[in-house]
Image (cartoon, rainbow, N blue to C red; front, top):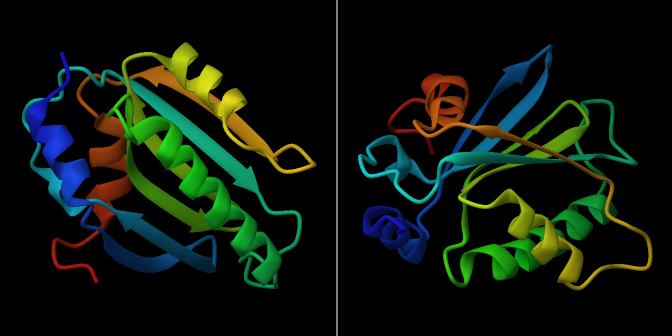
Length: 154
């Protein structure tokens, strides 16, 4: 059973941004602020971490305009594949030091893989690395990502 609390947050689709540095390079985080307070995490016990290493980046480790455009298109496609029925929810996007990471939570990683395979692709495969872990308390998001973001991040 999917959490109504989570599906309501995804429907509202309100995002917050935070900036900092990591290893001397810019760190950009975009996240759904309301996920800090979610109590009912039922239906989303698995962390799915999708990482895209940049083929082209500047001296600060940020993507080229072309790569940024490609990642935006990928994100639109993956959200359409995962969130239309709340199968998986995107909680945060992290960009730093030559890579962008999308942090999803789901109940079925195999289904996420199938949907990723079935979504529209470019002529070349996306340069993605996927990892999955059990994380029923959303510890990765709350303790590793959001802990360093102030409540009033902009």
